[in-house]
Image (tube, rainbow, N blue to C red; front, side, top):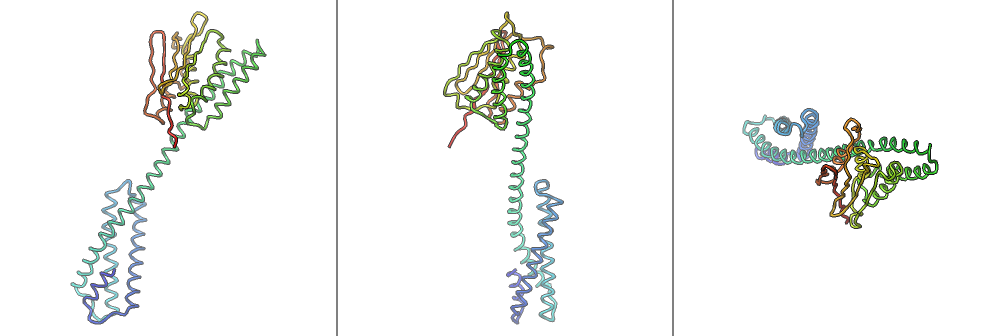
Length: 323
């Protein structure tokens, strides 16, 4: 603006009244700021930066410069006619527009850079928040599949126990409550320590041994340094449940399940006496659920290995660094 005023003064022999000059500059500045703010508002609605970046830049720059030059020219003509008896000459208008182009194009470039950066950062924050909300929804959705399945199976077991062994059913009910309490406790947790998971699985093993007696056996070999590592809640229960669901369990074909943890991985191995496929309920989430839950926290994969008489699943134990 001072440069434009200098261009005008260059061609004037008499000094300008300072009040008129200041008033003119403030009026032009208000029109420039207000008009360009309105242009930005309209373009934000019609051509948002993140969808129409290049088109928005060209259109906004062109319209902003044209609008600014129009305001400056009109203001200059009015200013010249008010203070003098002569209209501006072509040379004066050319100098005014040259100053306007030299000043406003760099200013608009800086303005667009900051404006775009501001909107890009805002969009990044919104995108990150959306991802977190989506992740939370997916995790909650996956975990919600556990409760009805677990509840239905164990209530059936409890119902059968009450009929022929009320005393045992009381112990079973206590263990069932322990396991379900752990499910409710960890429902809002994405990861828990392996030692917490072991406490849950020991009660869960009691429930299964009550149901299958000596036809199912368990062996736990968990190294102490592994117990501080993390895994998604109920991972072991789901792996054990998967073995129960897919195998024949009888006196002649007992199910043996080994749980080991070392070298940063948890391994669940079971003997294999597969049920016919038509007898297996495929409605559960199983390994797909576990793999998807792990994918949110680590690039390490869930590995499954199957032989003629054995099925083994290896999952990573996640180590959380503490400051």
